[in-house]
Length: 193
Picture 1 (cartoon, helix red, strand yellow):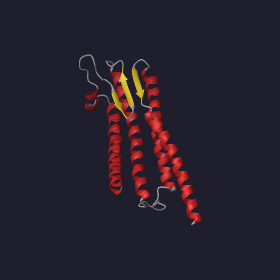
Picture 2 (cartoon, rainbow, N blue to C red):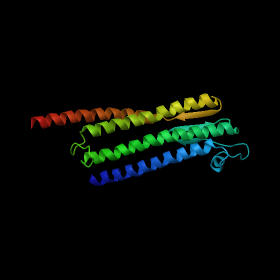
Picture 3 (tube, helix red, strand yellow):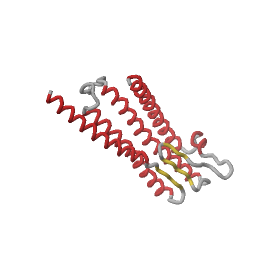
Picture 4 (tube, rainbow, N blue to C red):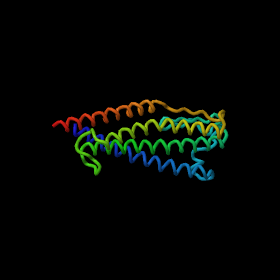
């Protein structure tokens, strides 16, 4: 069990760092796309025949420029995609950060740990936060999709938002309630002993 916990702690830290790198890359890409005449933006939007840009997908958000011969729609689609990636990658990094901290807290290795038990307030709070972050991902992507369609036109792009993470988040929020109940039971048992 300790080896599995160690693997999870290491993997969560690696994925957290990777997600923060994704946030930084998406921010850089937004700036590059904002300045259309840069080589980076031209790399993504370059007229090769009659198709400029096709479908892009990341973090449960997919965007496809229907009018893919129009550079304005393609640049707008790229900007929308990378803005979505900023939010999605940030929330994903926070999810992995909380996973890392939960395992460290349960082992009593954080400054806010209340012992060596999963039934403590910081763990319950972090589990609930993971659920909230999971619920936030599709909600934010849906809002970005609505704004992009309003700005570029509903006929110019097609978008898709994966809602499975929403269900996953709601399950995690429900599980946090069971952890809270477990903490109450543990404190009642300690009071009797």
